[in-house]
Image 1 (cartoon, rainbow, N blue to C red):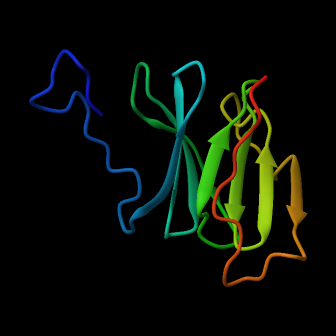
Image 2 (tube, helix red, strand yellow):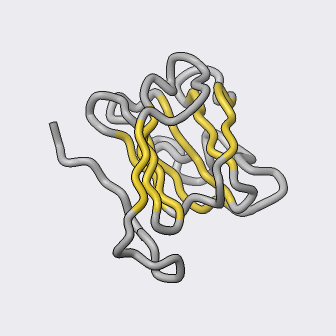
Amino acid sequence: MWSPNMASKPVVKMLAHLSSPVTSLAVSKCGRYMTTTGKDARFKVWDIRNSYKCLYDYFTPTPATSSAFSDTGLISLSFGNEVQIWKNSTHQKQKAPYMKHRFSGADKQSGIHKVQFIPY
């Protein structure tokens, strides 16, 4: 992560997924939380304002290809032809997604490439 005041070197270096590459990254509208997904089929929630530590770590059915925050703090993830919505994932560890939907029109090869919420 870089800051405009420190252009020559990063402010923070984070190894989000140690054994695999990152497949998506999203930052909350308030700028306090970040989510990452990786080829290791994991979804992580980070505190990027104070500690830069992983708050919660979740397993996903397959590696996610996209993630996004809503204005109200929901987190969406896409993998293949499925979308999951996670609620309150920045405040406490969740046992399962709040909602999930599998699209029958999207085949597994092409799948869903990007998820995004409409502004509040």
